[in-house]
Image 1 (cartoon, each protein chain N blue to C red):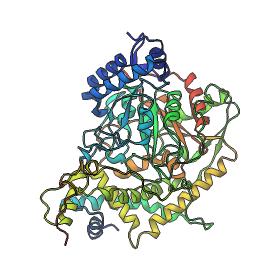
Image 2 (cartoon, rainbow over the protein chains, first blue to last red):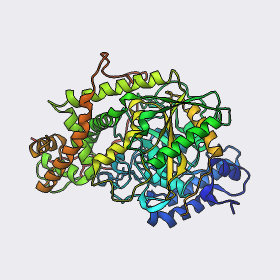
Image 3 (cartoon, rainbow over the protein chains, first blue to last red):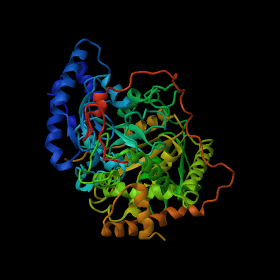
Image 4 (cartoon, one colour):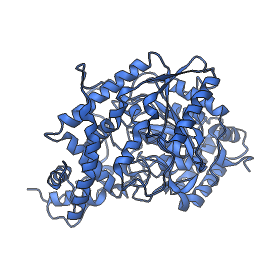
Length: 486
Length: 92
């Protein structure tokens, strides 16, 4: 019916097919829903599949297309990470605390996509409250990697990345606070971009760390990410931290020459903590970028060694504050056997939150508490300022920085939880972009000896997503991707 | 050193309850996590810059009332409510 495997279809492919009436949005939605349902027991990529409403969305998309009023994204099926509010559609944050929460409003990013008549296939699985890098902490069960079902999909946007990699939807929305779009994109062999802080409205994104969170797209390639970013980016009166700067067309540099760009490779990102296979793949990618015309040079980011600690102090402190709202009164899980208000409150939270969330709340309150604030939280804010200064210096001589996205490829399920320090330390490659607010994209640059994807990241100047998208896109034209066999 | 007394204090601040076994577990884990956080102690701030302004806040809207949320909508997700308000255990 479609003439090609929907598992490999991009937004461009599908848009062409819809426009040419090779198939309808309804037929497309049914095909993706069928595949999503078939693979749900294996991957757990979704928390909620919106079967009925997806078909209604598709019918509305078809009406618009037949009138000749469709946009690029009209009729395109997508998944939305389940920490992004969707009015009338359960939004759980993968937590018992919000197991039956139905938002009374939609996130701005979701509304903007709905305005183009995309088809919401379902809400994708994640680490609970976006805290984690494996998607195993989900109350609804962990997400499995389409390349190897015994391994994690990464996190926290593991469901979105796995869904795109397995061809359950061509694009998805994720969120990124410390690497949660880029790392699962790397583990699942797809492309994901964390925009500059302030590019996409956070209204309706359930808050984890308000100075770090950003919604961003995950797709099969950089071009699809650019299409989605065009749709969701822009000023929003409902989010005071959303920049009012005019947004460019994020596709404007795609297909253009990249040989004017200087790519810096910070040596500190290639230490002993990075696996040899990852280092080799990223160095190979650097050579490929040189062949494509870029100038590649070694640079230094000396404060990288403080980044993980600073990130966890800042993000946990903000999370401890943000998650104070979960008291069981206005929404969410509520304990029923507590007698006093205090009892009910503490039991509600203890019953509703999983272990990793509790750990982060404890760490956050530790960092903020009397006697520790100066040594921890205040220090972390100073490190943040220092890292921003170091990046500004680097960008005087480079247009972007090339780093691994993660120290290793996807690990086996069950490895992360018993060893939180090792798991936190593995965020070393991603957290600096969040701390400094800079845009960063991950795309696949290799496969390890087991066939697991390896991701490379390009970190760009603030609000210069178009440049890193164009370089990632150009790299993807020459790189031969291997599909997940699932 | 992170001990159970500190863990219990933080649990109170966090409005969390732990069993005895859970408290021991979280104490052990927090001890190793705090050791990782202690990396920041080596950092010396040199130029008086404490925190960077990431993005300036957008303009505020006029201080004029606009439609908010219908009462029924606001109450829809509550587990214990009347027709007009959220019900809570007695606090006074």
